[in-house]
Structures are given as C-alpha cells and as structure tokens.
Length: 58
Image (tube, rainbow, N blue to C red):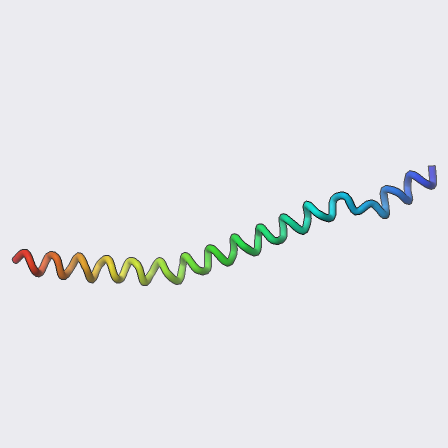
C-alpha cells in the first residue's frame, strides 16, 4: 500500500499535459496581443483606402 502511495505522489505522467496547456495559453495570449495591435492598423488602412476610393468616384 505504501508503494502505491509513493508511486502516485511521485508520478510525472500528468506533468506533460500541464506543460502543453501552459504553452497553449501563452501562445493564445500572444496571438490576441498581436491581433489587437495589428487589427487597429488594418482597420485604419482599410478606412483610408475606402475614403480614397469614395473621393475618387466623385
């Protein structure tokens, strides 16, 4: 019985999944930050192009 308890306490089988989950969360946060930063620039460029097209057709 003591051997089973030690085996459960010192088992590292779940460690890999926890590390993958942490990496996944960090990548998701990085993607959100990049999207937020680039999203504003892309919207501004599309609005600028739209305004130029609207002005050219008048």
